[in-house]
Length: 142
Image (cartoon, rainbow, N blue to C red; front, top):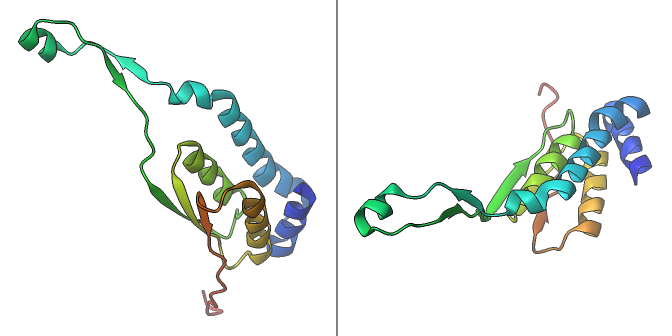
């Protein structure tokens, strides 16, 4: 799959294999590893200090925690200049946090967008992620 990503980046942006691997693929792989290693710890409830109000008003000790919950649906609109990295990096965080995602990749880097769509189709459940591939024609002066 890495070879397909590198070929798509070369076709879309003219990036060499080395540049594409260093600037796009490696960063995404490192982010995935980081989330795999730390996610359990990050989602644990975080104990915080005792509430002085409950202690003063009710006269009994309390324990307080911060619970991390998903917020809903996130829209990711990715740019054309780093299409793989700037689509996948936010997507990793969004899905790791338990949110749903709507992804709209760049219409300029079409080859990379189709590779990302293929990856998304293989890895994620349809109900977690909605992926739009649209071919909007832009004026040449854009």
